[in-house]
Length: 288
Image (tube, rainbow, N blue to C red; front, side, top):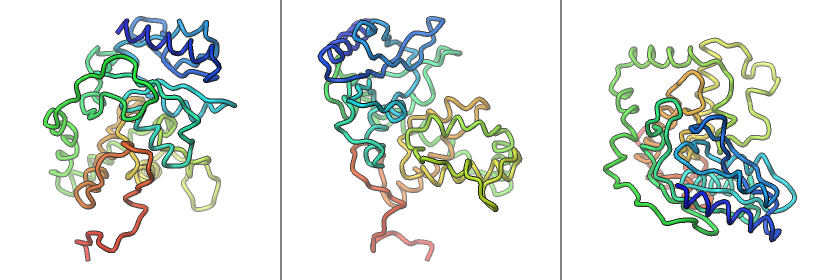
């Protein structure tokens, strides 16, 4: 990825030096060769600190929201980052003219611990950014649908095959393991409420206890909130310190919405199209 890394560095320096952007959000090296972290570059001379390799696992889109400054920000976007930017624009979290998108083709990133391709990358359907101002490097081949279709819903189908008691036992075990660190919320590009419901101090509202009932409430309400907006970046599951199967919860919603309403994939455009937030007279109502 040396050629692509140099292309990112070159354009970042040019944009900053020309004053076209005031900050570039990319990836920087960590302590070890297989570690990277989000990097915020404000001076052209610092563009040489940018790296792009097999371990650039962080999806950068939400940092563009959290790092708003006076002036345009350039963001390196792969398929997942670009879809997240589109979704945040649709949610009125930013406008398209606030960001300059450096498109970066991506064939998948590796897990730092196992050196294997990340699970979220195995099910990626858009290896090239779906929106950008300029594309750096050559576009990579997109996977055939059959390559990812079996993996995408494999966890969900296993849960759906369980009977009621098995499913209850399974999810009780999952929610009992949650430590309520909220890492999933912080990293999610569509968790953008100014004040999360779990942080509101209201009688009869979400409690602060770490127990099964409270954990279940938090996780299920979060899925309700993002269900029709999830762009399947997989960051929630990647950052979870307890290894919870959070994308199984998200994809259950995605699978049902696609089957019931042909919802399709989110984040392919920046147009607002919330499946759960609109009413149509021809909606399928099999439950009635």
